[in-house]
Length: 102
Image (cartoon, rainbow, N blue to C red; front, side, top):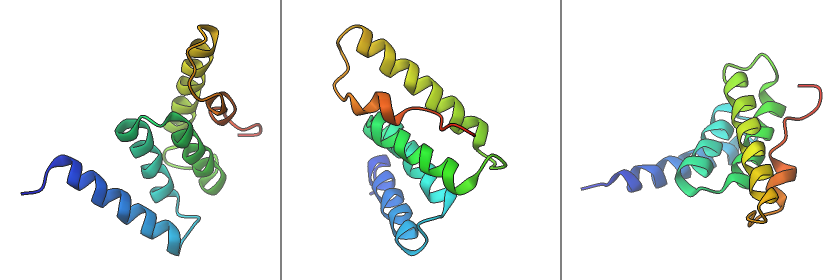
């Protein structure tokens, strides 16, 4: 019997396969960002995926507002952690920024 974790791993594999075939696929890019954030807790990787999503999907994208909100929230988290010298990954501050012109 498959567990929830098994389904998450299968989903990740499927999204990665999609991106190998179509690196500009916004759905797979977004969903991998969600998995990085919610499943792995890798906020830096999530922010990179969200930024890539904005690059390929543009400001008319269905999930545009959600992605901007996630980047903003993660940037606030990174800033707060840095203020308390508790930021484990300094790259998070650079990765979790809404790109200019978006």
